[in-house]
Length: 299
Image (cartoon, rainbow, N blue to C red; front, side, top):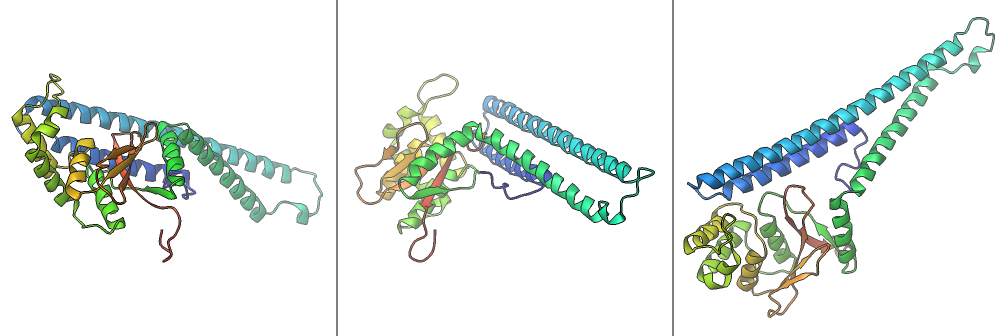
């Protein structure tokens, strides 16, 4: 279900969803910008082209959805006016002598019109929900939800601004009553650990241009970006965090087995969920929380 499912007005619901998608796009754009090394003109040009495509696709999608909804609402209003006109003509027909109390009052007409509009708006909302159910995002959410339900857990959404992996780890540290760090602190620790264990991490990083493993200079820049930008993290960063925090980390996915990192460490694992389709703009990590209230009434 969408966060906007309780909004009755379809125009307000569409506007709210568009605002959220624009916010998500801005988070992705900031991540892309900060992920380009300073002075790298080629990657900067590629980044700008990618941003232009993302913006164009999103705005085109929004314009199309607004136009479709406007057309539906105009059709609804046109049908309402036609029905009202017919009812008025029938009641004003010359020669009719039925008692005035049997005529449909203006208040009754207004109530019926409102009820019809509510019904049609509900149908539009139902169609929108049906369209959403057919998306990859919905299928992924349902699969992850099924896995978590068996564990008495549910997804706890994280902000999609490039720091989602670190937000999720911080949230899990709180839940497991472990030593707390801020996302910025975790980034710094991760960068430092990877730099000091270059042989363990560098072979898994390859250049998008040549396909070759990172050079020592490229690896240092990568680690610098981890510490100083909102570059998105992945399994390499989770591997480093597992060693830093001395704990295992489990990553639940929809179509793949759960990734278990740092199984050599005992104790409760930190549990994250990995989403390929949640934002439509890139990969995303969330945390989890109990699906049922605890003894203190908290969920």
